[in-house]
Each structure stands twice: as structure tokens, then as C-alpha cells.
Amino acid sequence: MKIQFFGAAQTVTGSMHLLHINGKKILLDCGLYQGKRKEAYEINKNLPFDPSIIDVMLLSHAHIDHSGNIPNLVKNGFNGHIYTTSATVDLCQIMLRDSAYLQERDVKFVNKKRQRQNKVLFEPLYSEEDVEKAMQNFIGIPYDKAIEVAPGVKVIFRDAGHILGSAGIVLEIRENGKFTRLGFSGDIGRPDMPVIRDPNILQDLDALIMESTYGNRLHPVTPEVEEEVAKIINGTVQRGGKIIIPAFAVGRTQLLVYVLHKLFNQNRIPQFPIFVDSPLAVNTTEVFRMHPECFDRETYRVFIDNYEDPFGFSRLTYIRDVEKSKQLNSFNGPCMIISASGMAEGGRIVHHLANNIENPNNLILFAGYAAQETLARKIMDGAEEVNILGNSYKVKSKIIKMDYFSAHADQKGLLDYLKLSKPDKLKSIFIVHGEEEQAIPLKKNIIEKGYKSVNFPKKGDKFEI
View 1 (cartoon, one colour):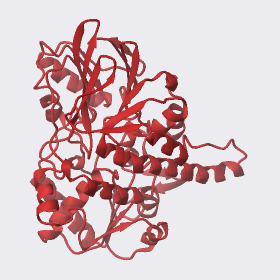
View 2 (tube, one colour; view 1 turned 90 degrees about the vertical axis):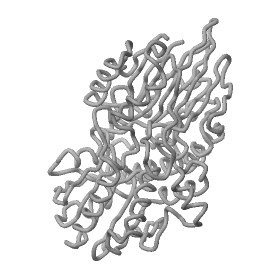
View 3 (cartoon, helix red, strand yellow; view 1 turned 180 degrees about the horizontal axis):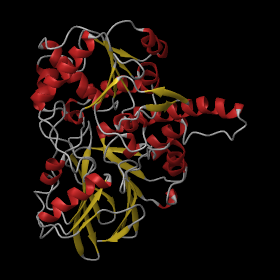
View 4 (cartoon, rainbow, N blue to C red; view 1 turned 120 degrees about the vertical axis):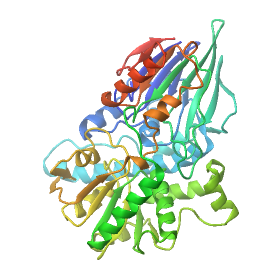
């Protein structure tokens, strides 16, 4: 058995790992790389292998950096099954369509300028028709059920507690008379977070591919965060400003809405308008409502026992229509706008940032991780001036970053993820989905716990198990 790392290798985006087992090729995730526009486009367009040679694909969850290049994979020759959870299938139905729509729209916008400059025009990576074709390859399976996906390879999806439908994947492999349990963590969630269940830790593994997004950080505790959110909101409202939150439409938006609902009910924040301006977030919230089986006990009790919608309340408005989105630009008075994408590389949030970033009364609140070279990361890192849609803007609004809302486990959570696989059995660990300043300290901590072979592979590296 061999593992080759093609994406999320010494970076956080574009998750993509290829397994060679019993003469078959199994792809783990096929995500979009996010970063500098031109570089990202070239990386995503030119897949590092011939898609037609892939026999099977396993998808950990629906986030675009894990699923977003699937239509391009199918478009270029992949014709195998894509196994994932049922909730992930439903989320991909809307997320991949949205990805295609945004690509087509953004390319059209950019090409107007390029055409005037007599430059070569861009093409989107894939179309909505490509998404429709790709969705025919998806097969949804329940958590905790073993299914054979290739000769000698059984797969079990365990709840990763990251977003709705997210999974850690166990591969039970029989090859040349040997039995191996290989784990792929996907993105690991955090215990005791609202809405979805805690992570179901993979156990008794021989090898593990594990994410490391926050491998050198610790998250704050919930009560402190709720008080901080209330304080931030009250301060911004008092000075008449707007709160702009770039948030991933899947998971992050629903968590924010749930917390805001709680603060409103407890009269800890004022009655002011909150807008979720993202057709994708609106559609995603509907998918959440379809899958209460993924909820934790508290949210399930609210949703089922009390007949109350945990993702809706009186001051909250969901916006689909583009004209109503544009009207927010001239909205007078304090309000909150939650809009995708979380890394501010596309979607309506880009326009909201352009319209609000130069007002010192406003606040831009980053509620999670952003990869290097993305617009969100540049603002987080203190850029005094940023380029948005081809124009330059001075960063005058207040900037706050809160890791609490991240759906990724911190260093403690990542180390805890190893506790059910002892060092004498778990002989190979591969750290992915993390930048060097996060992954290297995590690697050191894992070695200190007695695990011998801990690797931080770069793109293209191949290992034999």
C-alpha cells in the first residue's frame, strides 16, 4: 500500500490524497486550492494525475477545500463512485452548484476588464452542468456502517464533529495476507460545541492521516466567548457601526446564528437587524433542518422537543435575492451582515467588505481560519490597504479575529484524537492540512507522546505502508 499527497500538504487548502491498494487507486477528497488567484486557478485546473485512472473516491465532508474540485475531476475522466455520508451528499448538491455559479460569475466580471485590455479571457474550472454530472457519482452511506469499496478494502465513516455530515474515515485493508487499519481524520471538530455532535475518535489504527490546522493553538472556553461577542456587538451598535462577518456558509454561519439566538433570548445584546446574505447559507440551513440526526442533544431538544427553529429568530433575515443584497449597501444604522465566503475569496462578502472596510465605525469580525494569500488572511494579518475586485481600499474599520468559532480542533483536541490508538500499534502518522507554524509544534508534541514515525509530507511525496 502506498499513499501519495497532492493537496493540503504543508498548506491548509486543496485536500487530496491518493492511495494505491491491491492494484486500485482510491482518492481521499478532491478539494479546491485557495490562495493567489492566478496560482490557485492553475493548480485547480491542472490535476496532478490522470482522473481516469482513479477507481474510487472517498469524501470526508462538503467544505469546498475538500470537495470543490470534484466536478473538474469528473469532467476530465473520473467515472467511479464517490462515497460519503448522506448529509454530505445533500450539502454538495448545493455547494458545488454554488461554486460553479460563483466561478462563472467572477470569470465574467474579470473578463470584462481583460477584454478591454485585449488580454486572454479566463474560463471557469467547471460549469453547473459539470456539477450535475458529477453528482450522479455520489453514494450516501450512514455513519458506522462498513461497506466494501474495492477488493480487500472496507470503509467506515465516523462522525468527525466538524460540520454537518463530516466524517473521519477508517479503511480496513487486506493486502498480501496482511490486515491494516488506516485512518483519515478529515477535519476534526471540537467537543462541547453547539449544534452538532462531538467527534467520534478513530481507534485501533495502524496508520493515520491527520489534519493540523490549529496544531499550535488553544481555543478559549465558551462562556468567555459569548461574553466577548456580546461586548463586541454592544460596542459597535453604540457607535452606529455595522458588523461584517465573513463566514463559511456551511457550519460557521449556523453556529453564529445559534449563538446570536441565545444572546438575544438572554437580552445580552440589543434588538438590531441581522442579515445572513448568502443564498448558499440559506440553502445550507435548509439542509441542516433536514438532518436533525446529526445534532447534539441540546440542539435536538430545541428542534424536536420544543418545536423551535434553532436557526431562526425575529431579528434575523435570510437574503437570497441579489437586489436585496445590494440594498444592504445603503442600509442606515447598525446591523450585522453574515456572508460567504469565510476566506473572502468570492461571493457577496467581497462586495460588503468593499463597501464597509473604510468606515472606522464598522467592525469586521473574522470567525475562523483563512489560508495564506487570501483576502481574509491579508486583513487579519494587519494589511493597511487591500485590493478588492481590482480596486484598492484602505483598511480603516476595526478588525477582530475570534478562533472560538472555528470548527477545527485545537492542539489539545488533536492530541486527544490519538488517545485510542497506542504508539506500539499506530506506527505511521502523516500530518496534513496545516501550515508549518502549526504542524511542526504538533509533530513535536506527538513524538513526545511516544509515536515514532510522524511525517509532514510536502506535495507529491509518496510513502509505503
